[in-house]
Amino acid sequence: MSVGHVARAIESAGIPTSSIYTYAFRHVPDEMKLARVVVTRHPMGRPLGAPGDHARHRRVTMAALELFDTAEAQTMVELPEPYRPGSGA
Amino acid sequence: MSETFEEFRLSFSYGNRSDLNFKFLKSLPDDEAAEFFRQLLDELGDAYDHGSLDPLIQLAIDWQARAYAPREGMPRQWVYEDGPFAEPVKPLSESRVALFTSSGHYVAGDDPRPFGIEEMTQQEAEDRIGEFLKAAPVLSRIPIDTVHEDLRVRHGGYDITAAATDPGVSFPVTVLRELEAEGVIGKLHADAFSFAGATAQQRIINQTGPEWARLLATEEVDLALLVPV
Image (cartoon, rainbow over all chains, first blue to last red):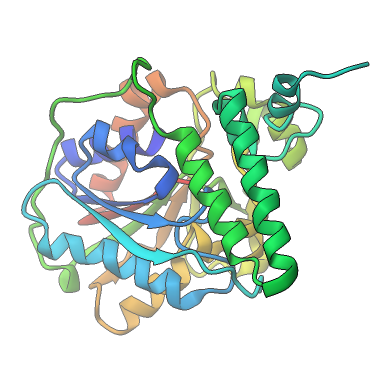
């Protein structure tokens, strides 16, 4: 919930936000009516992907950033890609 | 001494089998937790033959989501009818973007010192999770050129192994710096921000959240990328 409250405070101050949530907590931004949200099918603690999976980190980050240019109202996007274990690097 | 199944599943959440990847077992009724273990063993048996752990991992992710999903009739504390929506004043490619996470990262030598303790261990943070949940959060400022070796992470609420191994799993400064160099974002703010998200909620609503929002405004941040863990 913490980031949800922070997101609402930042939006209220006039600064647009985009948030990256894991699948387990997808109900949180929905209930808190957050402005822009990307949901990943990743486990808790690894919202952008596995350690070493730089391509996935980039894909998720881009999806969240693109919402700044495209979202005209509250928007939640679920990325369909399943989690893929990383190299651990 | 005999142990009930309920005691067994609860022990994964800050108990004698504490494992923050599986603390969700606390949120499942006994019959559903039993079904999780049955499916887990079923998939493990299959993995003997096909050798892939992917179905096992996916199963755990699915059950984690099932455990944390709101249940019918369960009272919900933070449900809003509406939410603020600020319009960007500039396109992304011309904007100053700040990264803000609840991952609990900080820079070596700049420990947020929870409860006044320098270099608190991850284990102690987990042991004191109840106190964290009542305390005000401390925001860490992390210069974006901080090298991995100087980055630390501590958070009593989740398994930090991945975040310590590769900060990119929850603190994507490396990707953001690439995107800045490529002109996708106008400017990456010189400092990223992180706090341990297991903290007092009312204080965030009434005090800390608005203070942090004013901080970003003062530092002329145009857009904020937020990463909860």
